[in-house]
Length: 570
Image (cartoon, rainbow, N blue to C red; front, side):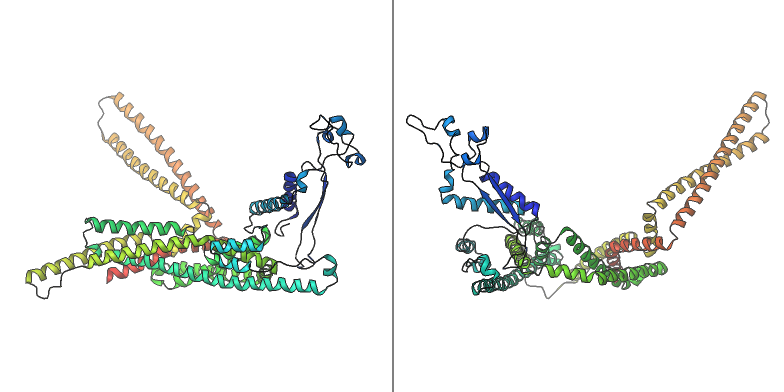
């Protein structure tokens, strides 16, 4: 049974195998789990005992006693094609003829391998069982051009060793152990050579992809390309082919699996869920520590970007340094457990299968590498062709008229001016997008209180708007009161009506004033509450860490801002 699987998963293999081949037979089986005598590795295996006799229609209706079931089966008498039910019930069950066909043994082996591979796949393992001979597997590998497997299968099968020679440590059992060690050593050497070849191919392909991308970038930023008239059909077609090639490279890169990633995926298959989670967490902490160190260095190298908020920046820097220290402490405390798990993967059985899985992943990855090479070579060829066509010019002039000099200078000046305006526009755009240390802390505080400051700001603006409207209405009311007092009234009814409206407006203003006062008091209490929440040591640590994340995301914009600022000045 597969060493990779637990007892319940191995039992599902046995149950499916029995359902396929022993459904109409009496059987019993036992799964043993112990260390192998030769390998000292976990060695689960199953013993199945069964009767060749069928559970026929007679047996299904009424079970025969054992003494009758194992008798010779009834044969048809003269005039019968099949023995009668009554005669069959008095005799034993017939034997299934398939057990006398030697070819059925190969069917059993093939089906058992198929079932194991299905269950292995269902449980996330890439390793598979092959029931064929070593010679047949070697021929297939040679046909597929897989030199690693072809060399690995180029060996003699092991000699059979019984249980007694193993327990008594005979020369034969010692020879088999030596042979196994030699095979494992041979596989490791072949794997290292194959891995080195795959790494070389990966490096060459990545280099080719970068050349294609950089060559295209250089061409499209060249003066010849910018000033070219791409309305010409041949130039336009070349340009479209280059862009399509770059798009193809981008699409294929999503399916690329590098050597390091393949090794991690293979190792992950041989870890328990708990170990896999621990390794994932440990490496995540390693990544966090590396990223924070890099970010701290990059932020320190951009002091001008944060000079307007140095106090806030120093607070963020202090928290980042403390976080890095905590992460290092975690890595130090858990290093022993991490190394122990890694050592498990170096056991002979696991290492052997991890190497086979890595080889399989990288073998499937060859098609992706070939497609990347093909697309990159096509892009490079088209870039060179387009560049040559664009650079085909007449012999440069050596004598110019004053008008030609003036026109040339005006063209160059206009080009520089456009570039200056574009860069200045980008500079101002980045200025508003850039996040300072103070702004990062402000945003972090708002995130910490789940948007409380933002909601408060919205309410504050609504309050200020309502207050401004109240002041305007109050001025209008005072003006109407003055007009009322200074006016010479000729009609008492008109005076009473105006007095009524003024009194009603006064009541409305008083109610508005009370509402605004309550709102102001509530907003002041809310801002005090939120600020109090943010004043604790734990809160300040969390806020600073959130600000670190904001600055990390904004770092690229800050760097682009500095570059644009320098370029505008130049």
